[in-house]
Image 1 (cartoon, rainbow, N blue to C red):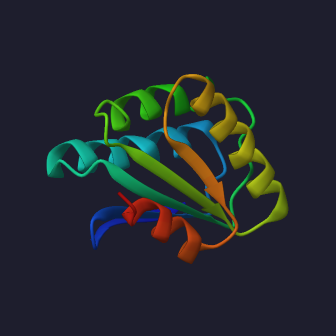
Image 2 (cartoon, rainbow, N blue to C red; image 1 turned 90 degrees about the vertical axis):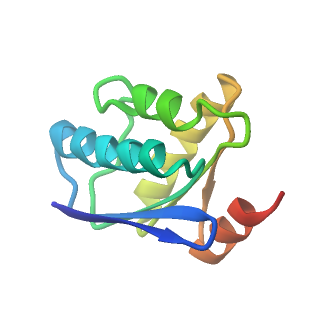
Length: 120
């Protein structure tokens, strides 16, 4: 697994490649959360490439990540996956997050995700 986290316009862009295990996921999400807190950026685009879908939110540390990044009222988290199964998994996670009052959405394109992140 490898990943990048960079500032793009008014949000963080986090790309992960070849994520396979729960530990990979936790490591990636912790790096994204750390950068969001360090930089004060409250909008994040997570783009997942060639990785296993996640359906067990607790096991992979997603709950903790969502609570950390979404701690400010102006937060937004957008997700994009390069596979149909990944998109389904992200829709599931987004539904759980929205039920907790968090602004998380899954998108089929990075352009749509970025546009939503940059909207007021």
